[in-house]
Length: 153
Ligand SMILES: [Zn+2]
Ligand SMILES: [Zn+2]
Image (cartoon, rainbow, N blue to C red):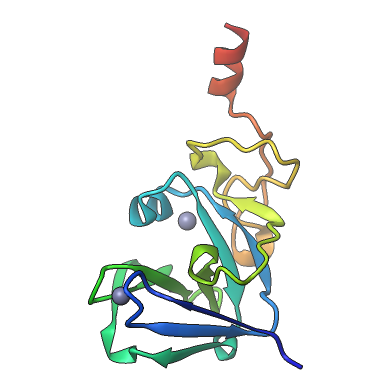
């Protein structure tokens, strides 16, 4: 049986469901995600578009497109965030916080160059994106140089 993970916006007007298993999970540290989420990091789960269904409240879904990279979807009733469609990747980021029944198993950090919250979890830290997603593929240490300077005085 296909697993499904249901979630909603902050007020519950919009109900969504992700089916199956995500293509990837991890953390994005970019300034756009931080500003949009009002949080130091965005925990993402990426899904093929056919895996994500809007069960109710489709008429309440608003969208912000600051760059061609991301179409950020939110509820027009409560302002709660739902998910982000990434046209270049052909994948939907359903925020891990939006579908709490999904066991969040992060595998990677992206845009770590922009981090304000260095995380010592041993996972790979991409400077921007993996090469197969159009990024540099370059890896960074868990601590930024500035943090090392603070620690060592
Ligand atoms: Zn809402
Ligand atoms: Zn981001």
